[in-house]
Length: 495
Image 1: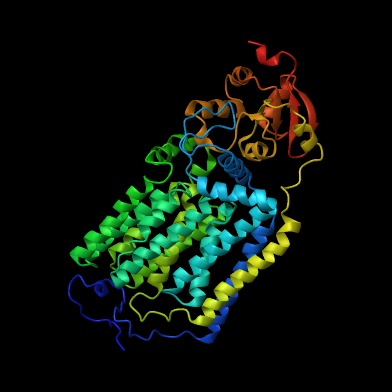
Image 2 (image 1 turned 180 degrees about the vertical axis):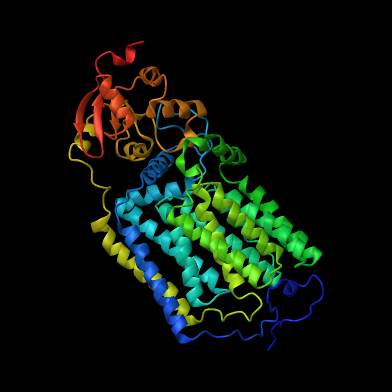
């Protein structure tokens, strides 16, 4: 039996920085009391039930619907390098960054309807939960691993919908854990390169994986955790990953597509600053505080862990979009820190793997039975909505809200919508125009007249709906959540 003990080490040894390692493979990690294993398993099963409940609900996130619409357009002939637009009001030259899951979602919708899309969400969420738990279990015990997974899911809770970004959360956690394992066993994870290639077709957060790689290489270098030849090889991983992202079917233009998001971020709330009084942000703050406390109390001097902590902290304050990113980075990081300087916990045994995999399979089987009855259609709409909007002629120009546009463009593809949530397809000037109209900014009426929109589908309590009523638009239908208005004759031609 060989276990690295506390005590003097030669300068630069990883163990000198508070990380207890054993590269011989002969150590016998300590076992946990049965009650901890059972409690950890119980928490994991409870989290699975939460995941099933989330996925079994009707598909309510309107962004899901514009992803479905784009997926169908790609299936129907859109080119990946020269995609079209679903609106005459969105004329930007753009490249897709999420096309692979959009196509999978659209195929699932074609085969199984929205119930299949809901089940697909369940598959992703079960995969995310299992991944977070098993990554944490490599370094922490069952109860700690389940607790960390629960905390990360809570931090990401407002983002756990059928959107490709959830896959990015999973891949960010895997990437973070991969670099921590490289520190442990000095093995280079070359598989991160093809993973980035796949990730670049899945979602636009793939550069974060490269950033984590660069940060990790710097930390490993400062820690002197790898011999110089191994460190040079490790440095090749983020470099080759950046190259891999340029050789997807979209091509090198993908870099410009990702960079262009920044110029549009101000128009979308999810790229705004987080509200640190929000419960998700409070839990994230507690996770950050826990990581700092563990580093200080255990005298941890690992630059790698400090670098990853600072990366998580930067994501925590950057935007709402990156709050979940911080949460999933912290899962493997805190798991490492919980047992730093002590004998590592026992790896999961076969019964634990069977619990994780078996419970996940049972959850997905149950979800397959449930979703045809609970999620076979979109959230209920007022009775007038479908006949009224379906009867509008093809090409009808409609002024609508950002959040409702995704659903409208999927359900009523014949409409020419002023706005929808996929900002990449709009120029910055078009986004500003739409914002001015929706917020009833100075000159809004002139800009709206120029669009030629004669139908409005809006929240009845919105500022624009009120302003249109003052402009003598007729309320054709109105309910608590949505209203349809029609412009008076000649309104769009008035100066």
